[in-house]
Length: 231
Image: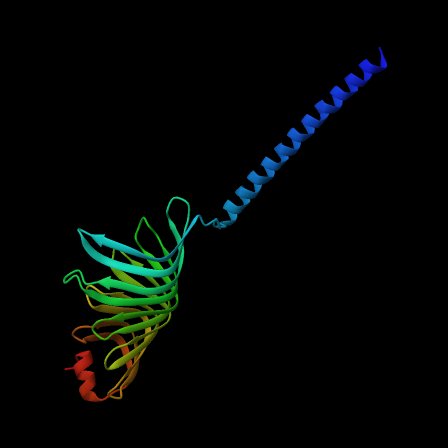
């Protein structure tokens, strides 16, 4: 065997070993990527990638040609495929009265998330819900559930009407029915001097009828009879 033939054989072996090494490293890289993906899925880590950003955009929902609600944000971040991940700077949010087609509720918040399939949206940070009949709700978080036409409020909820203020932790508001319900403990202060607490409050925003259980506190007798149906 000549020296030249020996060098050719050695070179061939080295090249083959290099190819095998690269293939092995690529296999390890794929295995590591798959392992990290499985670990992220098991830990429930949501994907962080945002595909499209749209500025100064309005999201609207309608049914039968009639508007249901609309939200206008400073910025919207979309995932690939068009599913909305998050939005910031809710400048103008409106829920329309399905009986008249006119705006009945105004919404503001710092951040929001929207589900394009269910048409539900969540609001966070300095959330304010103002009804055209004088009701104003403030809270930390709110979720609008399209199927139920309901706003679920949580986190230091305060409801202010024309003549009363209600404080609680959880509240539900049906704008189309003018109904507010608070399932837990509530504290109520009225402009006529009443101060009382109870649970399972139900308020008709339009008629001002108030229902509660386990009421205790102080209030003028005339107001108690008027609000709570005491006779």
